[in-house]
Each structure stands twice: as C-alpha cells, then as structure tokens.
Amino acid sequence: MTTNAYRLIPVLSCLSLLGVCHNSIAFQQPLNSARVPSRQRHVVSRSAAMTRLGEGGVDGNHGQRKQQQRDDYGEDSNGIVSRRDALSRAMCGAGLILAASAMTPVERSNALESNIIALPNLLISSSSEGGDRSVKGMPVPSKKLGGLSNKIRSVSKIMDELQRDLMQERWDLVEGYPTQLRSYVPVFTAYTDSAFPTEIPTDKGLRVALRYEVGRFFASLERFRQAANRKSLDEAYVAYSDMSLHLDRYLRVGGLYTFYDSTVSLEDYYSGVADSSLVYADPKKDPALVRDLVVLVKGPEKGRTGIVIGIYPDGSEARAVKLDRYRGIREVRVVPAEWAAKRLGEQDPDDVFLIPQSG
Image 1 (cartoon, one colour):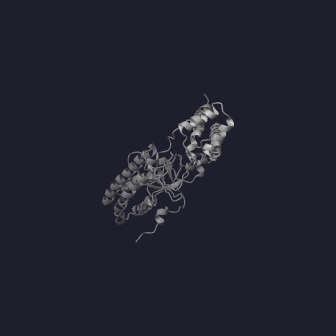
Image 2: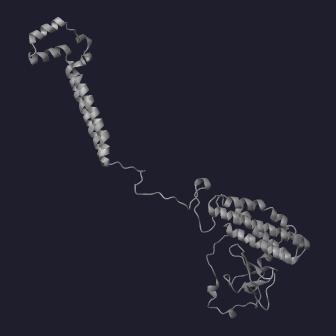
Image 3: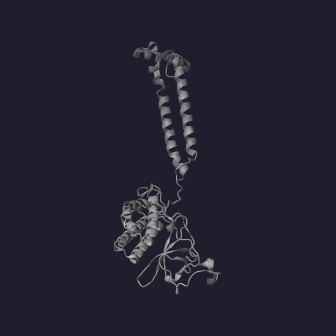
C-alpha cells in the first residue's frame, strides 16, 4: 500500500462519520416539534387521532397530510429543513477539503532523507569538553587567556637580561634572577591548564609536554642558582643553556611563537654557493667558545647567525646557540661543534648587550 493510500484511511473514516451524522439528523427531522414554539404545540387525543385516521385512511390524500403537517408544526418547518440542508452542504465541503489536503504531499523542513546516514565528527570535541575545538596541525591555544601569553613571553626578556649580566660576570645581579623567575611558576601552571583545557588527545598530549618543559626549566634554574652561589661560570653557562632550551621549547609547543616558519631546511638555498665564499673560521682549527658570534655552516639552519651560550661537557662538545632575533623571538639550538663556526671581521655585538641596565 502506498503512502497516499495510508493517508486516505483517516479521511475515509472522517467521511463515514460525517455520513452517520447526516443520517441521524435526517432521521430526527420529524421529531423536531420540540423546536416549535409552545403556543403552536397541541396534544391530539387517541379518539381524535382515530377519527382523523378514519377520515383520511391509510391511503389518504397526500396533500391533506402535508397541509395537516404544516398546521401541526407551523411555518418553522421550512426553516428546519433549510438549516439541515445548509449543514449537509457544509459537512460535504469540509470532507472535500480534507480529502484534497490528504492528497497533497507535505514538505517537512526538518525531515531527513531515508538514504542519508549521519556520521559523527570525530575531530571536534563535545561542548562539555570546551566547545567547538577542531584538531589542528599546530597548537592553537584557547582565546580566553587574558594576559597570560604576554607574561610568558616576558620571561624571554628576563632571560636576555640574565644572559647579559652572566656574560659580564655581574654576580651581584645574577643572584637575584632565580627568585624573580620562580615567581612565574603560577603563570606557567595557569597557562598550561587554560591554553589546552579539553580532554581530546591533542590537548592532553600538549599539557603533558608543557608540564615536562616547565619541570626541566625550573630544575635547570635550581642548578643555575647553585652554580651562581659558587660563582662557577662554566656550570652556570650550561645551566643557563638548558633553561633557554626548555623555555624555547615551551614557547614553541605552547603556540606562543609570534610567527610560524614552514621552511624545513635552509641548506637548499646554499646548494650553489661554495663554502669558500662564506667568511668564517674553521670550526676544527678554531672552535667557537661561549660569547663568540657564530654562523651555522651545516644542518637545516645553515646560514643563520647567533651567539654561543654554552658548551656541554658530556664529551659531545655540543654548542648551545642562541640565534639572532627574528620577529621578537630568539630560538635556541643545540648543534655539533663543527656546525657552529666563528664569524670573522667586524661584527655588531649581540643585542642583549644593548639592553640598558634597570636601576
């Protein structure tokens, strides 16, 4: 049975009900004497009725019966019939309207087609997990952070000032930095928990990574404090290098870089350039030391310049290089000794030495 046939079932039932009502009204029409005013009603006795029946007989004149009916019911009998006909026509019209509406297809604005299957969006967290946060290729911190992002970036400025005072061996000033940096523990914690607050796998993984970098940063800060108390310059350089490295990783993982560089390697740009055209000292014969201005001659960062901030005494002789500032950010790289070559000729000093002393 088709859909239209199903729709006709209630319509046919309605029409049948209307027909029953119509027949009941027609059957009760002779009994409508109750609607005649009381002044026109009268009771005919049994003897009078028999006399009247005897006079007319069963097959009496039809006109006489009509005349008698008008006499009994008065002039309102025509009005009763007229109202009955009007009601019948109204019910028939209503039935036709219902039938026409049943045959007309109904459009449902919210209905789904039967052949459409709703697929769940697995890349978007639910509203209970922090709203509409799609999985991104790069960390995207929450926008409701207030000034936390700027406070985290301000730690880089403190680290620049610490580098300046450490390389100038201003121990009286260096001793105050550990306390100043430790005051940022609540800031790091608040940013870690609020930047990636949901329970989707990416946010959970980023929180773990950020907490690890924060832990390593403050562990290195404690080693730096102890080295500063002993005025051990080499140990202080190594501890400072670790602090700078973990802070740089925190900024990168936490989406706090002011730029995004999609370049994988810079070596391709130097593929047609002879090494003799680059002016630098042979890193094997004259290795770079702390405070030396260097240029990276190998690796994906080839051609970038910076300053050596530490040499690891673990036998690898790896150099921690703080690259020159780019869009407000100074990245930190740990590279093999032969990758970092001293720059030759007259060079501008590292920009940390241009920061004025506060107080």
